[in-house]
Length: 154
Image (cartoon, rainbow, N blue to C red):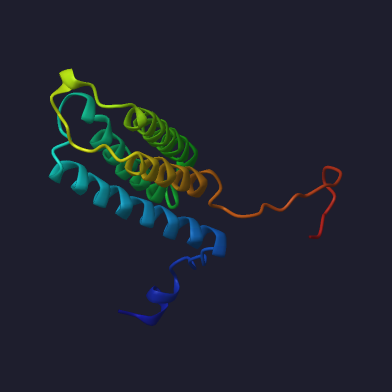
């Protein structure tokens, strides 16, 4: 390869610390959702009223993937909005699961397994972290004030 060909590529921008932190938080949230999905499926949460748990975990994985894809895509705003919406669904499903897990088990259900309230709360917290990472990954923006045509130095 000729040396001028390698130098003719456009320079890459280094990611800001805020953007790197958002990527790390999103990656951690995706990993947490994968672990939660595995736990849900191993515990048999795959039918009836237990289905929102795996659905929330799958929505979290999809939201995290969209959030990571929004970092380098041309149509970032729509991807970011979709990611924030999916993370909000994860939060709502986690809160609804927490409320459902605090109710006593009715005898007609037939399922006498313990229902710890902290597991759906973890889902809600992971969703909240995902929302926080997806809402503002770009860091602080510069505000430029001046008359049109006037050069403003920041």
